[in-house]
Length: 417
Image (tube, rainbow, N blue to C red; front, side, top):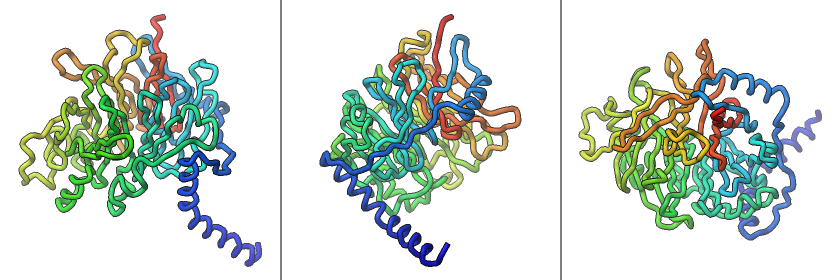
């Protein structure tokens, strides 16, 4: 290749790099004004072939309670958190990269027929957290922005979708606090109609000088705001990195998972499922690394007197992520109101743990008990064959489980036969 051609390609690449964010912002402005962007192509993901066949083979080793089965629902690259459309038409799947996927089962055979990228004219940055309001509005929590798609189940068939900013780029957290670590947000629309968004803090244990700004912005906590972006407040603090939350359909209380401190040993501190009963509660971090285990960095500091300890202590370093309350009618009655949650699996434990789906039942006194529900994604050699991320419920009462290692979504169903 000649020098002149190299220079031309290089200059084009540089110009594209500089134009990318501006072009993406311009496209957002167009979509907000119901204008076309000129983007006409989708990226489609093949749903069959050898890759899908190997995933199905792996699923044969997954252990479930009697009557339950697990099947491949869709091949979805980097699949993270999921939002099932209220009309049951499409499921939106976030990633930790730059894609949001739409997954459609058109013939309702409970296997996806089509997986394609959503809003391809937009540039996303860690669009991990999609969530729906009951009336069909899709919200998307990115690393440092929140978007609103008011009719996503209708518009997703076109490359151009109605899109608006709820929180502008750079205003979810201060830009100087952006990090590559713990930036996968999740969101939910609460019974009060407000958006609840988790803001993980980036350090294993933060330095004391970060306390003021983190408390102000809700970093290392959960914030809530009106769906138009107004009325922002810090709902909960003392959280290291929550990547899973849901509201109890009976009480309206918020429950959430939390990932705890690394480097304290293989068996401590425990992971957590927490229960928030009111706004303003503190869940103990960084004074506690998980459960009642104190951190070395803050062991000489007096923790707040009103710390709320976890409702459930999970196995250490299993990386508890997405969770959902079960409200469907397919599963046996004992699972009604139970929490299904995904354990992503440990990244630095000598003997790997997790990589499974847990079920947590809550008795009449409010006591919660967790046990494995679907497991087998760690083989006899300690190798990961999958890493579950999130759990979501389809309208028929079956459960979807996302897996960002394999790039897939599984469906768990039940039959008394």
